[in-house]
Image 1 (cartoon, rainbow, N blue to C red):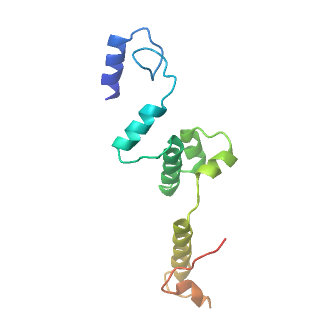
Image 2 (cartoon, rainbow, N blue to C red; image 1 turned 180 degrees about the vertical axis):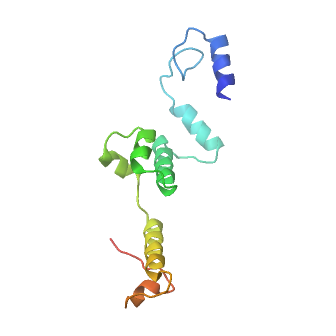
Image 3 (cartoon, rainbow, N blue to C red; image 1 turned 135 degrees about the vertical axis):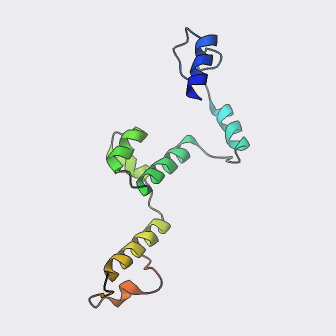
Length: 126
């Protein structure tokens, strides 16, 4: 797909150095096109940062090291990256379940911490 797009770009706009353009001219405002694309995709009201946030969360959940995710997303500071890497209640429940499973161990011994093996994962408050 990228090869075909590049060939089309070279054929129609060989002197245009821009990757994103409108008929060889700089794009001055993309909001109208963005809103239309989101509406047509059934994602009305989304902003680019929503998708950046989702991409970061997906990378972290997939186990990609955060430093690598920062490089991919273009974040230069840890503070800004952390603002995009939002922790949800679901993330907290999943962490509690992982702790519960880890403490069960292979022999099921809880070393007296019976609350760690309850049927419901612990809900942590913050």
